[in-house]
Amino acid sequence: MPTSIPLPTDADILSFARFLLKGIKKFGIKRVEKKLQELSITPCNNDLRNKILEEVSTAYELTPYIITHSEKRGKITQAKVMAMILFQIHLQIIQKDIAMFFGKKQSLVSRRITIFQKVKMEQQKINGTKMLNSDIPYQKVYTNGFMEKYDFVNNKINLYKNQCQKD
Image (cartoon, rainbow, N blue to C red; front, side, top):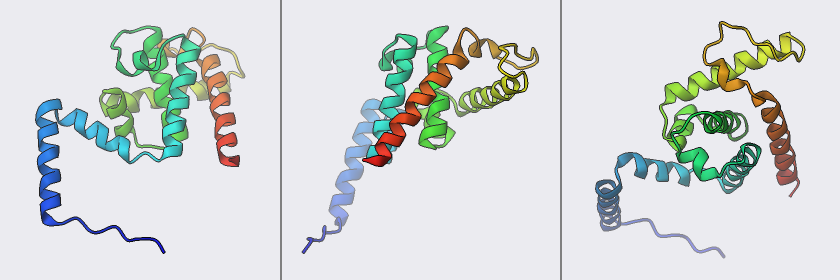
């Protein structure tokens, strides 16, 4: 027969609150909030998140740490944007959580995902021609093989998800 877990007492809750406050003072509220958000991600999603970072980092010849922590531009920005898009599609987490994970503002994540959707639709209208509409802002992020890399990585993630669901 399974044993029941005892409910926390008032002293337990107070002790936890003090511990949390100590962490906030030491590391800052954003960092503590980020760690608490990570606790709510299921193990399968955690593995999928790591797989997305691994595949994107392989495609761009970077490390996952650089993708999640670097402020440099160029291919690091492209890799970060791709990871944000894949997080939204495959992990189905809200943009606020994606922004928190990458240390960015939610408006930036929203803008990148919206622009990606426009670029993807524009690409489909042109039947595979890599010409983009000039009125799409920030379109340079989605050039230099971005869409080809996205399709390749997205296919690998889909294969991984299918394999994960079979197990």
